Amino acid sequence: MDRESQEFYQSGEEVEIGVYRSLSTGQFVRIRQTGGTLPEAEGGRRDTYEWISGNPDWDFEESDLTEPREEVKPMVVAEVSITPLVEGELKPYIDAAVEEIKKSGVKYEVDALGTTLEGDLDTVLEVAKHAHEAVRRKGAERVMTEIRIDEKAGGATINEELEGYR
Image (cartoon, rainbow, N blue to C red; front, side, top):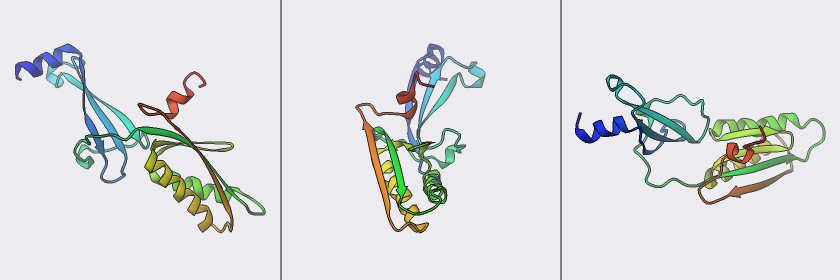
């Protein structure tokens, strides 16, 4: 091991390795390494993973990841409320929208009046569009979709927005 690596492994310092995209799911993960957290025999470092978009339970193989991206799009949090204007039960239509969101891989939370999405702005808008279209495909002749977006410098996450309320 060279001297620079040895100093890093003993330092406890954290460095960002990069942001990678899954070739199979399209989700993004930020990988960091922290020195000094493991015995040298085990590599002397710890990798940490921060999911930028998608499900944190996503089990990935490193061979599935692209090269690091130079620029990461800022994260937004958006509330999407899709209302099918139909007679009768709404649940099958809402289920179609939620299934479309689920397939996208973005982080989301369903609540009583809408669904909160987390991701980069382009992805969130695309997911909302696909969810809206899923309700139309389900048979709703008229659909109203409302979107509220929270975007701030440095990005926004669902967890940050709900900190202290859970």
